[in-house]
Length: 403
Image (cartoon, rainbow, N blue to C red; front, side, top):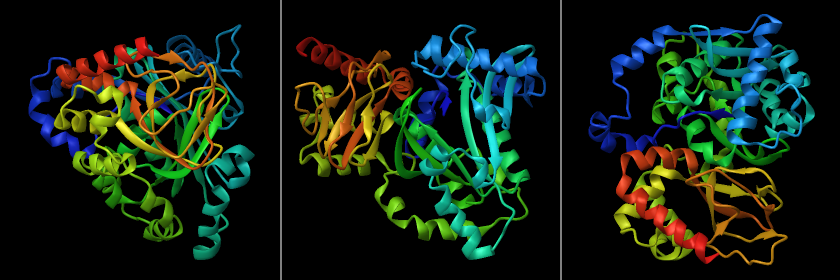
């Protein structure tokens, strides 16, 4: 999971380029290039460097965001776990200041804990090596604990860190690399080229998470989503197309049913939502009341992603942080609260404008779909389209007063 400043969906970028040139909040390209040259990306080698990273993690996850972190060392304000024992702990430093970090674990299936093996269908991926190549020597990758200091989330540091992770994967001949994140960051990982696996899990520290895989050799997909990793991938001399073709066949059902936030246009997303709800979203979803169809379409495409949930999946977990607004699209959900949630209504606490704490757990009683409107993407959207964003805020304020 990466706590970073997200990018706009691929099909939204072109229409915003001219506007962004005149937006003072966006740093000039030359300033970002200069900053990138000053940022040092390395791997922690000493216990002192690792302890600094553990403290940094705690500052971001516990003190800034407010995750409940049942497994943290709250007395010493440190966040570490067993994957640190054999993982590569990356750091990003500007001078002596630690401004970002991520962790990478690369190894055989037997090296990973059972919960990760299940969450990412690793045994299913292992079949590729058994069926296609008969290989005994291979590595899976898993990236986690990715985060950036607040002041640098608009800087090149996230590209540099993820670029380093990709480089490590290539050096170790990793073809399938896994990552997970809270629902509101799904578009971020899809922007970098990861694909959803159709499985959601409940992390005891971070709440409901979506599982992804990055096909390291899928250059065509990296190009299609506008991934910053594309320029690294095209320089590689040897690509394993067998792994890509196997994945497309093995996970065809998941690929066909998943709405990739980076490949769907605003018009396509609008039509999908009309079909799910049986109504135009701005006439049916209260937060969109007051928006024209064009405004609602732009807002939904800039901030929203459709998430599929299997029966039993958690949508919210009590005392976890809400960094989104969840709207039920189809299916049924259940909670301990007496309120019956219908399609078009929100699930859980409203964390679109400011982070909030979920007062209760909500899970899918049947297979369901939700529209997740992201806190991070809304902050970016507010800068780009303040008039539309302010209408959304007024609608949210009205809804909170009513409930």
